[in-house]
Length: 376
Image (cartoon, rainbow, N blue to C red):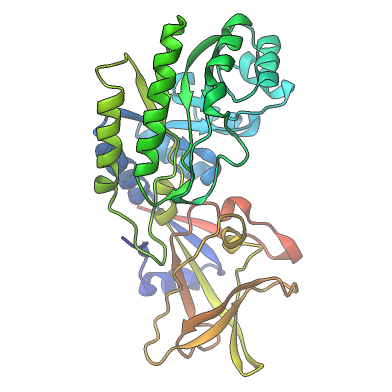
């Protein structure tokens, strides 16, 4: 499936008469639909904790809170954000493997007593700043099928798992389970299957040492289509469900959670931007728009995002340069995107702009970040 705009050009034109472009259109219905689709695809057996880092704006938090979703947070500010919406503590999962002492102490003071770790020194910090807390071990997984490798920075080697779990217990902590992340924008459910199998072996080895784990976190990574199609989520999750059933359900008394971010929010947002300039440079057409790499297209840099550029124009398309509005020559979104003949003030719609875009945007060069318009 490919990302589709949640607004028509007709509606975008009407909105742009009363509002300066660029702006992002958020569909509440789409957030709710995505959350429900993923939950159903996982057979309602996996509790979903939305990864706040994907898009932390209050409108998204409120929608997910109202449908009973949980939240995965990575910092004190993200915790404060969700707590502003009176989210109960059992709906908050703190998953950062490496933390400042002050953050551990803050979360502990606020009532969070489950912490993630992946190394010796983190165990010592948690034992000191949050004594007698529950802990989960994050392990490395193979991310060969994912766009972004999230085991590059975090995750203990599986062969160290038993040693680390025993050390945590010996320091007065309570090991609860194992977590992993197969990588962002994972294109094959086989990655989850391999990781779930690995976690099964760790659960068994831990049980032989008297450590009875009861929590498994399968992370995020569920894919969405941008310019290229990805598997349907129901089909994608079938392999995950089968692996959980074979390796965990009926074998361990375990709760399973996931941390979807992109899948929940990405295609719920459509960017409305416009052509503000046009020129011929070195025999190639350049179009300048009023959003760019320092704004909503920051995902091109930080998230390897490849977005669909939609126009109303038909006709012959030629490889064109699409550039942002800032004075920095780095601010070039695409160098060879096939586009029809566009005019100044033509609107452009860009679907799939909800994840890792606005969150990493800036006001560089005095250009304000795109505003958010909420529709049903």
